[in-house]
Amino acid sequence: MEATEVQNDRLRPVHQDDLARLLEWRNHPSIRRYMYSRDEITPEQHQEWFEQSENHPDKHLFIVESDSGPLGFVQFTMIRAEPVFDWGFYVIPGSPAGSGRRLGSAALHHAFSKLGAHKVCGQAISDNSASLRFHEAMGFEREGRLREQYFDGSRYHDVVCFGLLKSEWATSQ
Image (cartoon, rainbow, N blue to C red; front, side, top):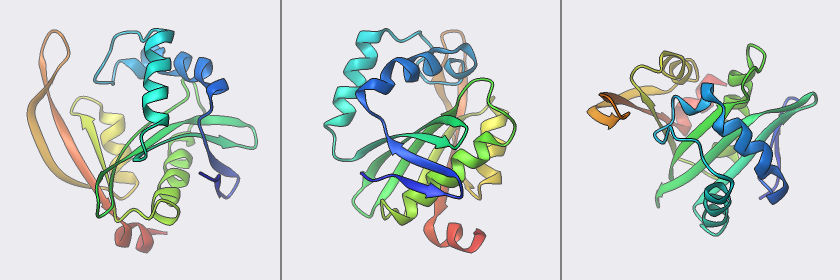
Protein backbone atom coordinates (compact mmCIF):
# COMPACT_ATOMS: atom_id res chain seq x y z
CA MET A 1 0.00 0.00 0.00
CA GLU A 2 1.40 3.38 -0.96
CA ALA A 3 1.83 6.30 1.42
CA THR A 4 -0.84 8.99 1.60
CA GLU A 5 -0.05 12.61 2.44
CA VAL A 6 -2.39 15.30 3.78
CA GLN A 7 -0.61 18.65 4.08
CA ASN A 8 2.64 17.56 5.77
CA ASP A 9 1.12 14.50 7.48
CA ARG A 10 1.32 11.11 5.83
CA LEU A 11 0.41 7.49 6.38
CA ARG A 12 2.82 4.73 5.61
CA PRO A 13 2.46 1.00 6.14
CA VAL A 14 3.82 -0.50 9.35
CA HIS A 15 7.00 -2.51 8.76
CA GLN A 16 8.76 -5.12 10.85
CA ASP A 17 11.34 -2.57 12.01
CA ASP A 18 8.51 -0.40 13.47
CA LEU A 19 7.33 -3.08 15.89
CA ALA A 20 9.51 -2.24 18.91
CA ARG A 21 8.46 1.42 18.82
CA LEU A 22 4.82 0.51 18.17
CA LEU A 23 4.84 -1.92 21.12
CA GLU A 24 6.28 0.78 23.38
CA TRP A 25 3.47 3.17 22.39
CA ARG A 26 0.76 0.51 22.75
CA ASN A 27 1.97 -0.59 26.19
CA HIS A 28 2.14 2.96 27.56
CA PRO A 29 -0.36 3.30 30.44
CA SER A 30 -2.11 6.30 28.82
CA ILE A 31 -2.88 4.17 25.74
CA ARG A 32 -3.40 0.80 27.39
CA ARG A 33 -6.05 2.09 29.83
CA TYR A 34 -8.54 2.66 26.98
CA MET A 35 -7.94 -0.58 25.09
CA TYR A 36 -10.16 -3.64 25.28
CA SER A 37 -7.07 -5.58 26.29
CA ARG A 38 -5.48 -3.60 29.10
CA ASP A 39 -2.75 -6.11 29.85
CA GLU A 40 0.77 -5.29 28.82
CA ILE A 41 1.49 -7.00 25.52
CA THR A 42 4.63 -9.13 25.22
CA PRO A 43 6.97 -8.82 22.23
CA GLU A 44 5.91 -12.34 21.16
CA GLN A 45 2.20 -11.45 21.27
CA HIS A 46 2.93 -8.26 19.34
CA GLN A 47 4.88 -10.14 16.67
CA GLU A 48 2.06 -12.67 16.33
CA TRP A 49 -0.53 -9.85 15.96
CA PHE A 50 1.62 -8.20 13.29
CA GLU A 51 2.10 -11.40 11.30
CA GLN A 52 -1.63 -12.19 11.40
CA SER A 53 -2.49 -8.63 10.38
CA GLU A 54 0.12 -8.50 7.64
CA ASN A 55 -1.30 -11.67 6.09
CA HIS A 56 -4.94 -10.54 6.34
CA PRO A 57 -6.03 -8.76 3.13
CA ASP A 58 -8.73 -6.74 4.91
CA LYS A 59 -6.39 -5.23 7.54
CA HIS A 60 -4.34 -2.11 6.92
CA LEU A 61 -1.80 -0.92 9.52
CA PHE A 62 -0.21 2.52 9.30
CA ILE A 63 2.15 4.85 11.09
CA VAL A 64 1.05 8.47 10.71
CA GLU A 65 4.03 10.81 10.37
CA SER A 66 4.70 14.51 10.00
CA ASP A 67 7.87 16.30 8.98
CA SER A 68 8.83 16.43 12.67
CA GLY A 69 8.31 12.70 13.29
CA PRO A 70 5.61 10.14 14.02
CA LEU A 71 2.16 11.18 15.30
CA GLY A 72 0.71 7.74 16.01
CA PHE A 73 -0.83 4.55 14.72
CA VAL A 74 -4.02 3.77 12.81
CA GLN A 75 -5.58 0.49 11.70
CA PHE A 76 -8.44 -0.09 9.27
CA THR A 77 -10.20 -3.44 9.03
CA MET A 78 -12.78 -4.07 6.33
CA ILE A 79 -15.88 -5.55 7.94
CA ARG A 80 -18.24 -5.62 5.00
CA ALA A 81 -17.84 -6.01 1.26
CA GLU A 82 -19.61 -2.66 0.70
CA PRO A 83 -16.76 -1.52 1.82
CA VAL A 84 -17.22 -0.57 5.46
CA PHE A 85 -14.17 -0.33 7.73
CA ASP A 86 -13.63 -0.36 11.48
CA TRP A 87 -10.82 1.84 12.64
CA GLY A 88 -8.62 1.98 15.69
CA PHE A 89 -5.93 4.53 16.43
CA TYR A 90 -3.84 6.28 19.02
CA VAL A 91 -1.47 9.21 19.12
CA ILE A 92 1.96 8.81 20.64
CA PRO A 93 1.91 9.45 24.39
CA GLY A 94 2.96 13.03 25.10
CA SER A 95 2.15 14.25 21.59
CA PRO A 96 1.51 17.98 21.23
CA ALA A 97 -2.04 19.32 21.16
CA GLY A 98 -3.68 18.86 17.77
CA SER A 99 -1.82 15.63 16.94
CA GLY A 100 -5.00 13.57 17.16
CA ARG A 101 -6.85 15.83 14.76
CA ARG A 102 -3.95 15.68 12.30
CA LEU A 103 -3.75 11.87 12.60
CA GLY A 104 -7.52 11.57 12.13
CA SER A 105 -7.61 13.84 9.08
CA ALA A 106 -4.78 12.01 7.34
CA ALA A 107 -6.21 8.60 8.23
CA LEU A 108 -9.77 9.37 7.11
CA HIS A 109 -8.52 10.95 3.90
CA HIS A 110 -6.67 7.70 3.21
CA ALA A 111 -9.68 5.54 4.07
CA PHE A 112 -12.02 7.39 1.73
CA SER A 113 -9.63 8.23 -1.10
CA LYS A 114 -7.25 5.26 -1.19
CA LEU A 115 -9.09 2.35 0.44
CA GLY A 116 -12.39 3.31 -1.21
CA ALA A 117 -14.33 3.24 2.05
CA HIS A 118 -18.03 3.98 1.94
CA LYS A 119 -18.13 4.19 5.75
CA VAL A 120 -15.71 4.19 8.67
CA CYS A 121 -16.96 2.89 12.03
CA GLY A 122 -15.45 3.46 15.44
CA GLN A 123 -16.11 2.49 19.02
CA ALA A 124 -15.17 4.13 22.29
CA ILE A 125 -15.54 2.92 25.84
CA SER A 126 -18.10 5.26 27.39
CA ASP A 127 -15.75 6.68 30.02
CA ASN A 128 -13.16 7.67 27.38
CA SER A 129 -14.44 11.22 27.04
CA ALA A 130 -11.47 12.28 24.88
CA SER A 131 -12.29 9.61 22.28
CA LEU A 132 -16.00 10.47 22.35
CA ARG A 133 -15.24 14.16 21.73
CA PHE A 134 -12.65 13.30 19.08
CA HIS A 135 -15.04 11.17 17.03
CA GLU A 136 -17.68 13.89 17.11
CA ALA A 137 -15.13 16.59 16.20
CA MET A 138 -14.07 14.48 13.19
CA GLY A 139 -17.68 14.39 11.99
CA PHE A 140 -18.73 10.94 13.19
CA GLU A 141 -22.33 10.39 14.23
CA ARG A 142 -23.25 8.41 17.32
CA GLU A 143 -25.03 5.35 15.98
CA GLY A 144 -25.60 3.33 19.10
CA ARG A 145 -24.67 2.29 22.58
CA LEU A 146 -23.77 -1.27 23.52
CA ARG A 147 -24.84 -1.47 27.14
CA GLU A 148 -22.36 -3.08 29.54
CA GLN A 149 -20.47 -4.50 26.58
CA TYR A 150 -16.95 -4.33 28.01
CA PHE A 151 -15.72 -5.73 31.34
CA ASP A 152 -12.46 -4.18 32.52
CA GLY A 153 -11.82 -6.71 35.27
CA SER A 154 -13.78 -4.87 37.92
CA ARG A 155 -16.87 -3.42 36.25
CA TYR A 156 -18.83 -3.30 33.01
CA HIS A 157 -18.75 -0.30 30.67
CA ASP A 158 -20.98 0.76 27.83
CA VAL A 159 -19.42 1.07 24.38
CA VAL A 160 -20.45 3.95 22.11
CA CYS A 161 -20.62 3.19 18.36
CA PHE A 162 -19.82 5.83 15.74
CA GLY A 163 -20.07 6.01 11.95
CA LEU A 164 -18.85 8.41 9.28
CA LEU A 165 -20.02 8.14 5.67
CA LYS A 166 -17.84 9.15 2.73
CA SER A 167 -20.49 11.72 1.69
CA GLU A 168 -20.37 13.30 5.16
CA TRP A 169 -16.58 13.41 5.10
CA ALA A 170 -16.56 14.97 1.64
CA THR A 171 -18.87 17.81 2.68
CA SER A 172 -16.85 18.57 5.81
CA GLN A 173 -13.56 19.05 3.93
